[in-house]
Amino acid sequence: MILYLDTSAMIKLYIQEAGSELIKEAIDTNRIIATAGIAYSEAISAFVRLTLLNSISKKDYEICKSSIKRDWASFFIIDVSENIIQLAADLIEKHKIRSFDGIHLASAVLLNKQINKRVTFSSWDKKLLKSAQKEELQILSIATA
Image (cartoon, rainbow, N blue to C red; front, side, top):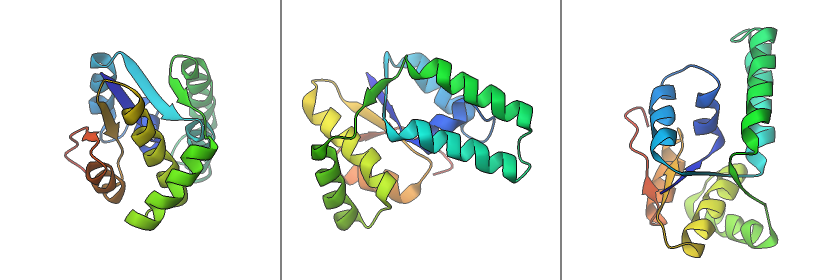
């Protein structure tokens, strides 16, 4: 099975918060973990923002940054291609979602179409999850979404 992580799900691997255990369990039960190439810079941005808000220390920031850098090679990274950009634009218009959410959704939709295995989509954004469900992606059940 393939688990697709948007950035809101991915950062739960590095920052202990509601949903972190669920994501870690889901990763343990899925052989392939996929995400869009934009997730790396989005995650670093989230870590920086948490540091500026004093939600994490500078030391924790450095740990998060080095951990994602180490783990990045183990993820199946979907490059943001012209096809993904075009599909993202269509999905943004159709579902009224944000731009990077459109890229994540388009990445998962195209991956789902290209393989024989179902892609399970994970996010902590309710609107994005509903959009993914409408696009016939399997959704990781999360109580907080």
